[in-house]
Image 1 (cartoon, rainbow, N blue to C red):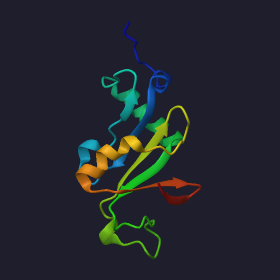
Image 2 (tube, helix red, strand yellow; image 1 turned 90 degrees about the vertical axis):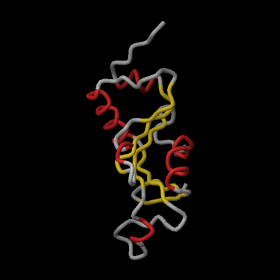
Image 3 (cartoon, helix red, strand yellow; image 1 turned 135 degrees about the vertical axis):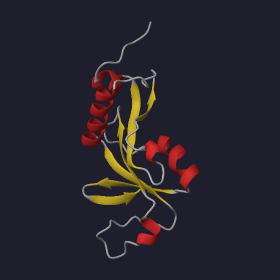
Image 4 (cartoon, rainbow, N blue to C red; image 1 turned 180 degrees about the horizontal axis):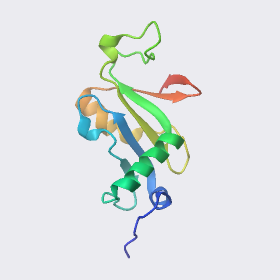
Length: 132
């Protein structure tokens, strides 16, 4: 039996997690592309529904970024922020659909570590940046 996905709730009910990068250093084809671990294939969603899902993840998920070993994770306005080591960060939003805002970024490792050398991941919690 084939299930039709037509709403955000359909996607949430059939996905373990959802995430997207709004800034992916030197790989614009990954920007705003929805990634997920899902029971069903949800690749052929209408663009309007994809946009709704991305907005939902942005509003309800966790802001994160990945970085290289030399990046200490300081925000841009911090005196220790080092432009040379921070220019290749990849930023995005992550949502664990079972445990809303759970910090479990295992699926992200396959994207940034191999192709960008990113070994560190940071997330925002209570307006503070923390390393995972």
